[in-house]
Amino acid sequence: MPRHAGAADVLTELRTATAGEHEQVETALGLMDPLLGRERLVAVLTRLHAFWTAAEAGLDAWARRCPTDAETVAWLQRRRAHLFAADLRALHAAPDTSSVQPELPAVEDTDQALGRLYVLEGATLGGTFISRHLATLPTLGPGVRLGAFSPYGAETGAMWHAYRRVTRERVAAGGDADRLVGAARDTFAALAAWCVPRKNPVLLAPRRRTPSPHPSQARGGARTGPSLGTGPAA
Ligand code: HEM
Image (cartoon, rainbow, N blue to C red; front, side, top):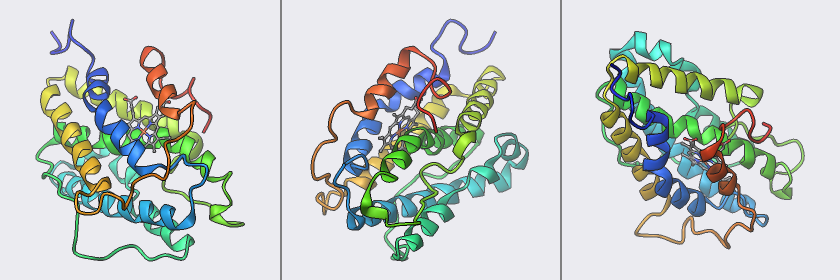
């Protein structure tokens, strides 16, 4: 019998277990601020670039050890630290090469890899809102298009559904759901800590709260219904 027969689906567990950190990160980044300026956008992209670089290094090491599992989830297509770097260059800023890096645990196995991927891949859902919002701002200047927030464009729903299918199949085949959810929590907690640095909490403190209706209300609403696909258009 599958481990989760009669218990919560692993995707539901992932969402519930990380909802607090998602809200923290969303608020700290303040990307939906109608007054978002270039300087702040560059600060956010710099932070996210460093985080994705560290998070992907752990996944790259896992992919070398478990190439079949990495291929099953199309890991190579999902890498996007380089897109954050490209976005920074498009805004005439350089990626931060300082030695300060976010602290992330090693990815020991495929359960933990899928937990980390939940955070990185889920970000493409909110990313569709962010991309559309950024396109309305004068911040970017004419002709500047950013790629990291919505890397899959019209394929966002398909990529997310594929991730979810692989994750459910892993658990149904005996994967350790607790380990998977634990890795997602650790990744999200590391991101939250990285986005709200204790030593300089104003670095990414939003100027003001995002006005209502907030996109996370759509996320909350999606708890009772399908996620992307019936959600916002990419
Ligand atoms: C890099 C930072 C972020 C990460 C890691 C992240 C992560 C996630 C994850 C894991 C999910 C999937 C939830 C699920 O269905 O299980 C999600 C969904 C979502 N996020 Fe974020 N998120 C980030 C930033 C944001 C921001 C700034 C916003 C504000 C617009 C946002 C808005 C949303 C929305 C609206 C959804 C639901 C989309 C849908 O169900 O169609 N996210 N995010």
